[in-house]
Length: 291
Image (cartoon, rainbow, N blue to C red; front, side):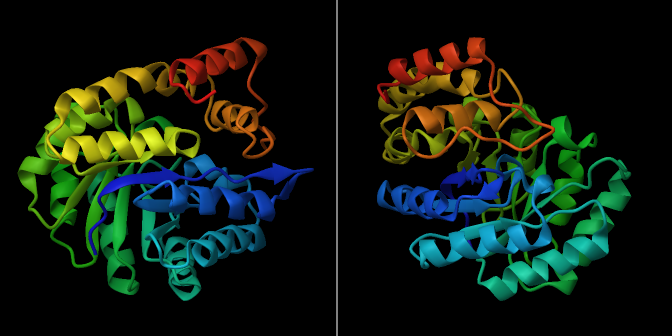
């Protein structure tokens, strides 16, 4: 399976500290109707570390069922324990996911050989196509381009979400792999630049609230309309920045509330976006012609 285009790293709507299933269903429906190319449930933006096992299954199954095979759905299954990751990946497969997004193990900071063996064992134990996820700012460990290229040769490892903040890493991975291996940016602000280096999409936070423009930017790029894509990117630039002034997903949830998508509620230890950040987000949405 190929993963290309704009994939939304979905927020998990909460209301009174419970998963707001109705809001999640509407969010998915609106994403599909806006032309999104794929969805990611239970990723970083979904506040997955705060979800109980039952809530994880509820969120994943709700997204999969609501998307109804109209677009691919990946489920974030990565843990900092190989056996637990295998168990979650098998569960995602049973729920009907189209792929697994598997983050580098956090906190325990494995060596590069440990990363290689971790992902290889998961791929060998599970049937889902796997997208690797490298996000050192969250996990405390950075998977090198060399390790990613090694893993690209393992059956069922078909893609990477590269969120190290390094365009050179994306260039090196694209150069060191092959056409069947999909490289996606994990940073909205670097998406367009990464496409110029050969990546084939982005796993996006901004598309929770700017799905239409993000899809239009990708379609313009694919059609060779570089100036049009760049104009959309510039219009969205302040939003990319505002959504990460504070820890995500607090800012994007405030943006979602402004647009009537869901409550701004996040789970502790996160707190809602500050008043200063709220003003930045409001201004960015106006600049993007979304508000």
